[in-house]
Image 1 (cartoon, rainbow, N blue to C red):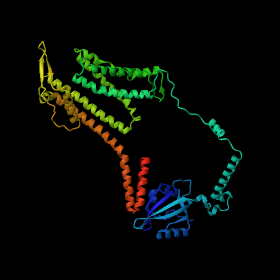
Image 2: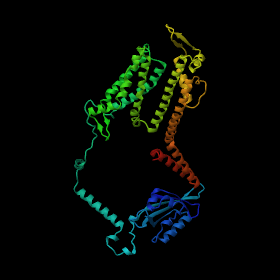
Image 3: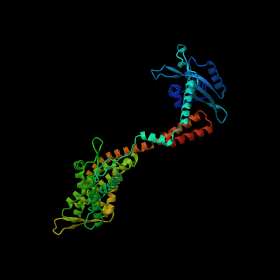
Image 4: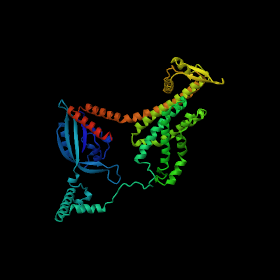
Length: 500
């Protein structure tokens, strides 16, 4: 229903709140209504009864509870086809609200449109016109009710079976059913459940590849003795090869938004897009490298090509929004990407330290780490005496954790200094890493701040609304019992609608 709240402690009883329904029934917006008198004098017109106006003033001044039938005028300035004001009959009810000290602090005015139950308002020019123009809306309402009763009596004299009527309606209704696109038996739909699960598997294996390949290349972790790692990587390569086969038999969305299921078109589209990258990333170079020590550098280069598989992340990430909220999905992916870059930089940092140590720089960070951990390096001269090999040194786990610690401290601009760059190569790499890390840090954590702010915006809006309601009731001295009921209503409504 339409209602107003007015301050009963101030002269002329100004309006302090009006709901949306009152704005519709009066034609005024909320800004035009606020702080005006609750007598609604801005809606008075020529035909408004003066005696009723006096009674309203008396009830407000005496703080009584009463109701009136009053003729007011609705504002129609927004509609050029209608006159500026339209008369309408309203049932106005005035109810005072008292606080704990038994003082009237607010007036509650409710309005109901009863124009349909009153005689139509006629101007002097329209009097004596057509007979139908003089019919009251109440008479029209009564006639429609009488007509409805006649129809009911007709149906009661000739009863119709419910089954017959239902069958008659169903025969004229269109039948709709969900029908999947017709595809050849060996073609998979790109949105089927199996393909969704398969994409999750490929995503996990892609992260495994992105983590293990740089580590294996930097720390030379692949030898013929690491049979378990060779088996795992071989299984991963087989799964990637199966993914290539599946991509030759998976539909895709064409330029016009249609689902393309023609096998020839699917094969040509895959050959032109992702086939070369997928093929390079699934070949088992690590297996060849494990048994071929003469071509170790070439094998490591080929093994690094598996990181190209990360380009497929864009295809899988687009499916995450179906299962996770957009903000949460982006937050998780950004943090994973940040850690992944730190892992890559740690592998490069170790490779530079290893190269400097092999070249005789005994003040490099890796050589200092070996002396601190009491696992010193030593050189072994080859049989021909023309080359030396660096042996012993700290455990592989210690070297990786220290390298990751250094890259994370540089990327987060902390820099404790207990691990520092000493050689020229290390300093050049540190400078490049700082430039890249500053841009990455600003980009990622700028997005993280925006995502967290979006996730907490609803909570902030909720608390602002509660504070506004509390201040309103405190300002107008609303009774405590009524305040608790209002707060309970606001909280319950928000819980059901989530602020929508």
